Length: 239
Image 1 (spheres, one colour):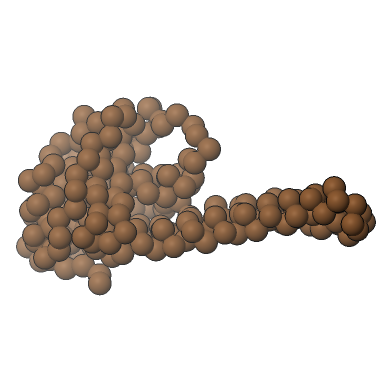
Image 2: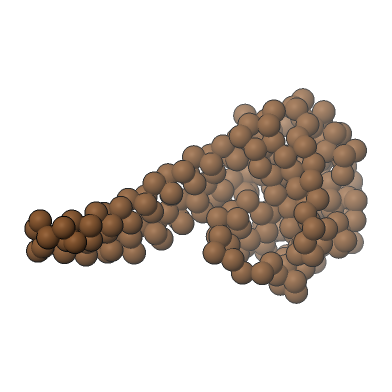
């Protein structure tokens, strides 16, 4: 892992993030950190067990581009906004109930508490949606594309995504209250990310456009693995 991340970060001309391995069997990976110089990339034990080195390289290229495209900072800002919105409804509900207990204005307080309760129900999904928007479909597609340009190997990431999707389905993470907010950080998530089949199709088209040897023009979505493209020399990323 260290060797691959060092190689790709040097190729991008960017600082190398810290590297962690999470002790979970669910295959996944994510990046975090407030900026390029204070970032980390984490792979689970599960993903290291089901992917080969070339596929892991494709995944790490994707995660590094989340860092270098400043997606992590955007996610943090959206998360803070989501928290503020969620607590706005709770505060109104609490304020209404507190005023009612003081019997200063029973009818008005009751109405305010009802409004607060209604807002908390309405605003909670909006808060969750903001987190989803932080790492949106466009950002995932961009990280796929930019990471593949960085590695020069779109089909490596395509094959990895196919294996990860099947691995997550066979061995999902235990459900928690923070599923959706955590899922936004992962390379594979049914909550916030585009369909894996669409991502694979885009990567196959990208490999074919490169004219790289080893791309089977008749390969259908999901049939990845054997038809790897050869490394592509061009580098680049979004600033």
